Structures are given as C-alpha cells and as structure tokens.
Amino acid sequence: MQQPVSIMSIASVSPLGDSPEAVWQNYSSKKHFFSRHDFNGNTAWGAFLPESIKSGIDSLRNSDNKYRSLDDSVLFAIAAARKAVEKSGWNKDAIFGINIGSSRGATGLFEQHFAEFLQNNKAQTLASPTTTLGNISSWVAHDLQSSGPEISHSITCSTSLHALLNGIAWLNSGMSDKFLVGGSEAPLTAFTIAQMQALKIYSKENGEFPSRAMDFEKTYNSMILGEGAAICCLESGINENAIAIVSGIGYATEILVHNTSISTEADCFQKSMKMALGNLDPSEIDAIVMHAPGTIKGDLTELRAIEKIFKNHKPLLTTNKWQTGHTFGASGILSVEMAVLMLQKQQFVGIPFGENQIQKPLRKIMVNSVGFGGNAVSVVIEGTNQ
Image (cartoon, rainbow, N blue to C red; front, side):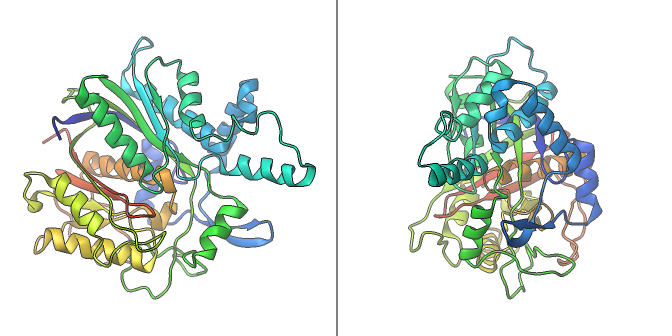
C-alpha cells in the first residue's frame, strides 16, 4: 500500500456489547453468546444483541419519525457510527467519506414487505427506499450530517474489509483525508436462517460450544449467524492519536467452480495474505484473526492457505465466530476490533477448545475475511506502541 493509514477509533454493536470494556470482558470470558430461537416454527441458534443494546436501538428508532421505517441493519450502523465518530476526535466541521456495506442488506424489512405483497398484491410506499442497499450509508450520513461521499456495497462476507480497502484507496488518492468504513448485518430472520440450513452448513449441535469455528478436527458444519455492526474512522498517514495502524492490505478472488466455492488450499487467501505482507517477513506477523466461519471446508482451506504462506513460522491463530456467530458483512471489522484490542491489551485471546498457544508480545496482527465466490481480503494491523 502507498502509505500507512491510522485507525482513529473503532466502535461496534454486537452480541459482545457496545463498549471496548464490555467487548474485551466478553472476549476474555471464554463463553459463547448463542441462544436458540423460534424462527417461524424453525428452532435454530442465533447470536443476538443483548437486551440493553436492543433497548437502545428501540430508543433510536423512536427518536425520529423517519427512523421508525428503517431496517435493523441501518439502525445498528447508525448506533455504531455515532460511537465511532464520538471517539475519533473529529469535530462537527470535519469532512469525511462514508462506506458502509452489508451482505444481505435490509433483510428483515424486505421479508416483511414481501410477505405483505404476497397477501395484498400491493407494496407499501416506503418498501423500495427502505430496502435498497445504499440505504445504510445514506442514513448514517444523514444522522451524522456529513458532507463527504457516501458509498454502499455488498461483497458477501468480506464486505466490511472491502469497505476498509475502499476507504484506504480514497485516502491514498488524496481525494479525502478522513473516511468512515464498516459493515452492518441483521440476518436473524426466518428466511435467512432457512437459506443457510439449505446449504447444509448451519449448526444443529447442542453441546457446550454449538459453533466449532476453528476446530479443524470437526466432522460436521457448525456455522451460526449473529447480528451487529462495526465501524472504523480512518485518517491518512500516521496520526499521534491513532489507536492502531493499517500497514498492509491484500485482496484476491479465485475462479468459481460453484456459487459458494473456495479451493482446497484457498488460493484467494494465499494471494491476499501475500499481498498484505508486501515486503514483511512472515515471521513479523504475531497472530492472525481468521475468517473461520465454522464450516468444515471453510476453516480447513484457510488453515491450509496459512500453512502455505507462513510455512515453518506459524502465527498464533484465533477467531471470534465461536462466540459471536458469523455476522456476514460486519464480520471483518469486528475481527479488526478484536485485533486492535489484543494489541492494546498485549494479550492474545484464543479459543477454549483449540490447541494451547503460548502468549507472546503482539506487534502485528493479520485479519482475514472471505465471502461466497472467493472474495478474500487480508489486512495487517499494527499497534501504536511499537
């Protein structure tokens, strides 16, 4: 990448909480945040926002007449973006771009409007504007009263890390010096759960850990969905007030064999990780926050790619999906948040059912994300106390 980029702040709303203190405490708890829920007669696992956060989202929804018709994915993004900007040090006159994406978009609202259409053969007036993908960034821009460019996209599960890449591209181009990036997802709906079950990748387990993300010995798929949003505030160069630095980025796709395919050794991840390393020796990466969705093939192919790139040097490996579930488009920045917290705390957070990994100083952490179709992104995050 042309020059490093500063992460000025990061904020999230997720099953882990909505403050750095709560998120870190829950990462350290070694417990998952799944509960079984009735999705229109189909009982399945999901990772929901805590009631305290849901109450705040309801208050946000009722705070403005216009917000009452918005999907949860939009409200999650507004809530997280407010916190991120508040912590960034940006004043009210700051001009910044916004790129917030989503894998599924306004899922709940779309299902509701479509059900009404099937019943009445008519659509509500706001059905279209409240379910378009650009709806997320445009409402965040409205809420923050920003005046820079606003962009939305969907690149499946790597959406929020692609937003990070796009923000960095704008910053490196000189067309902007501040950018707000992230992803938001509200996928805990009957139709979305049914789609994942139809792919035969959804967890049916009732054991201590219903999602076995990063268990490379598992014999069954164990992906579970979670909801939430995560937002970063970025600035060009290295700022003395930064909480972390993005010093490497990589991206790649691979030729599709199937709609959900990824190669045996995840060629896309090998390419993205190699690009993100740049001139770095692989031994300089202390840990990797894996994408690891909890599926047999998804977890193993990423591990094989890591082994190919890092060879004899094996970084510490972790993931958050055994706790939070797969938050689709928001998952990449939630993983960045995990990396930033580990760098700040100088403490590696492993998984309770994985191999014991020895703690060591953390200087550089790689974060991986990939979506259906082999759209991989890898980023290198550095602490500011190097």
